[in-house]
Amino acid sequence: MQKVKFLALLKKLNQQELEGFHKYLKQNHPREKIALRVFEYLIRFYPNFEPKEKLRLEYAFQKIFKPDIYREDYAQKKMLNTASDLYKWLKNFLITSKAQHNPQIQQSIWLSILLERGMKDEFSRKSETFYHQTRNAPFNTPSDALPNWMASYFQREHLGWDKPLIHTNIIEQCAETMADCWEVLRLKMACEMSLMKKFADHAPTQQTMQPTDFQQLGQSILKDIYESLLQLINSGEDMHFARLESLLIQNGQEIDPKELEWVIRSAYNFMAEESRHDQDPIQFERMHRLDKIGLAYGVYLQGGYLPSSAFGNIVTVACHAKDFEWASGFIRDFSHIIVEKNRQKAISLARAVLAFETGNFKEVLDLLEPLGFEDPLDTLRSKSLLLRSYYELHSDEDIILDTCASLENLLRRSPKKEAVKALLAFVLVLKRLVVRKSSKQLILDCIEKAPTLYSKKWLLEKTAHYKPW
Image 1: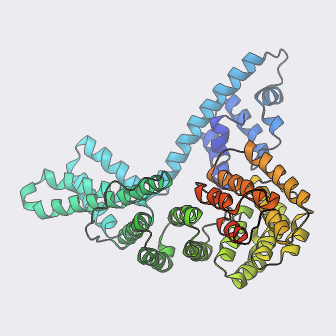
Image 2: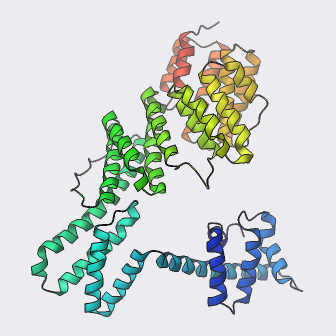
Image 3: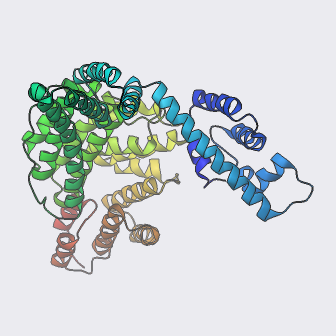
């Protein structure tokens, strides 16, 4: 049942929601005994839903119903139909719960009903109140723009019923509010489009329109942040990064954490892409400063824990920015919030990054040679650190070439993402440096012609001192 929509949605529930849905089923669908038995079987495996073999359709069917005569086609059809019903009921439960806990959604639904029923007096009173409540209330995510937009729409409908010419200025104000809500969403989408065009090596087709001033604090902050992000992506100029950084530091607590993460990740991805092409140290300095903001507001945490991949990226960027003391303190102070099963290897890999960047190449070997990594990105990062450390220590040529061959085979079997392509190009250049049969100019040409190249600056430094046999 792992691919069934109901189970995928069920996994996203917290304990309180799970208990609430159980009560909802008993109260609203008490005669659906089959669905209740299926649900009560599945929640025995909450929250991890392991082992997977006990969630297979046929296995679950046998355990729940214990049929005397077992037919696989009947079991599958019965379980899938039941899962479909449960998914529909869970969706209704979540929608209802969302409305119950969100007064603005309730107001929007109720005003829609009043408008449809033509209950003019009640609609006029409620729409007026709703408009003034939302107009002065800040919001911290673009989705909060919808109630503001709806409130302005309902207010315009209310005013349109009663001598609209008298209310021309207020109706115009409603239209401006609706346009302002759209502007926030438009700017966010413009950021996404510019990022995609950057990655595809296309310049933006048009400049951002100058938006009007906003009357709501929360709305104004989001507009300013999106506008600064878009200008940074389009120009790369430091003044736009400085403005974005300042806005995030000053107003991060007023923005929804997921929205803040999106902004930081978008700026981060842009600078990471730029750094792959030009190796400009300023990009790593900017990324490091963004990491500090992300850590301050907890946007990298997942369920209270810091993923090992994020931990390693933060240390790597800090080292590229030459903030070694900060990186060392970060490893010491934040390692306890990595998921325990990944903690020790993540710490060793982070320490190896710091050791390499500070010239302690023997320590890199001591830390990484005994370890194997399950995560593909951690494997690639550790292999590249080992290769460069072997080269710096003038290790035996066979050791380096064997490690190159192992890494190359792994890369050629991996999905052809940018990071994989960049690391494969790195391995091919390093092999030339080790074998020493190519001319220096040929190696330089390989470095310059590579679309993306891992550790380009390091390769150029090694090539500067290279001499063929």
